[in-house]
Image 1 (tube, rainbow, N blue to C red):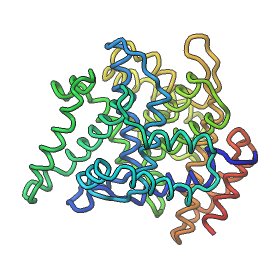
Image 2 (image 1 turned 180 degrees about the vertical axis):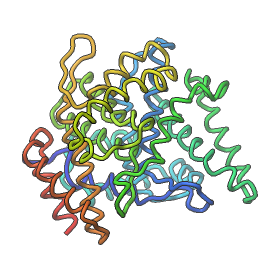
Image 3 (image 1 turned 90 degrees about the vertical axis):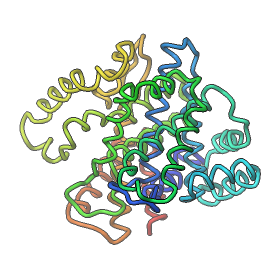
Length: 384
């Protein structure tokens, strides 16, 4: 592949670098809270809110608009570093044009080979009023993801000055979105969002857990990298809206069963005879008994489609098309970046060295669907 693309090495590094952005770092934190993980959690919550509007509210949801809005706001946050939310939102409200111009300039500097159409849509999003149902969903998902984070630090910071004001402000921001069915349900009964809490637990699980690595990314943050990559690839290929939806949310939820089983490293799966099949069977049992009861029955078929055999190509009359092999390539690319970046930061191990070589080989041989060779070559130049 050649020419300017939405999916390119600079874009991948821009997104991945948010794993170095630490949230709530002026508070005592029981776990590390990064911007990459927050954005991943937000994307999952946006799916839940959108599904409620679609299935119980009868609304026609433009899912591509939700995915784009989540990604564009992610890009904006990646540029605005770790400003306090109150400061960030005030700057946006009072100096929106100046901030937008600054974000666009930074994006152009960091991602010079971005696809012109992608860049144009991003600029249009930044300068829009953001008053659609989809914009409300993305905004509400942002606040609910922040609330989840706040709950993890609240008890440890009860004696800190201003903590109750922060709690009150956050509740007030969520209250502004009570017109959304999912938000109303959550405010009336927090158990409604047990599924979102379960997804959030993937923020506890470290990738490459048995080797030192910087930055220490999580399963959920990794999943968003995979989801955004496949979306950008679909954008380049002018994919239809159903394929975009299937690919993005399959990628986002493909590791969800690991919240119940934890990650079993690939060499063990590959070398212990019959283990992969046994794990798959066990994961399905757990998904049915532990995850499905947390979401409405009308969503079950779609969730099964996303988490069972996510790396297989599908073209189904009812569910639509999914390019599972390309999602697998994105999964490998996200893992490759994790190993490559850590080694370039000077933190390495035999496991990371071997992993990087093996992942590179697989991508060069089987990753043509996402232009893997071009991505690797660009990442090599960025990380020299």
